[in-house]
Length: 142
Image 1 (cartoon, rainbow, N blue to C red):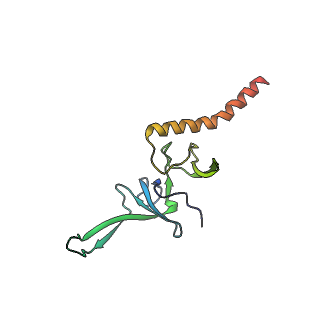
Image 2: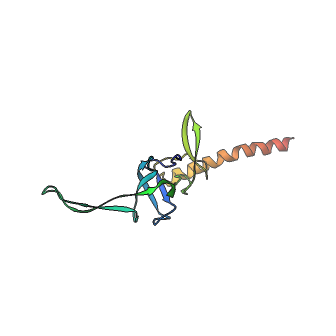
Image 3: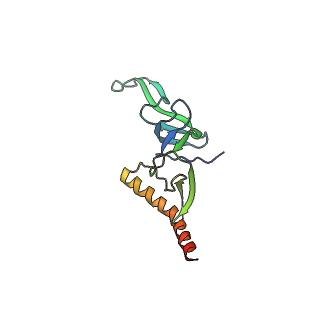
């Protein structure tokens, strides 16, 4: 069985199914069944359950629960670049972390503010561009 690239509290984009193109938040992950529970505004993937009032103070009726989607139908959304991305793994400070394959920023589960996201994206671009700049200066000297 393949490793899951999503975690609880990740923001994901649904890439297949009746909710294709919508974003949602992962509320739970079931690795054995390879499914994730998602919750978001305007999703069609919602389970409705009839509940009977057990006490006089309880209210019966239909309640909505988060829907379940196969894990292969969702992609994590990078908080730095705001795009759905594949997940890479690397070591930082002795810990294994997930990173965005598009911009190189470390993936965090919470949505970042726009200012922080822009700063993280710029630092990721600088990290990629730094080795190239050193190589060009060496070529000029020789």
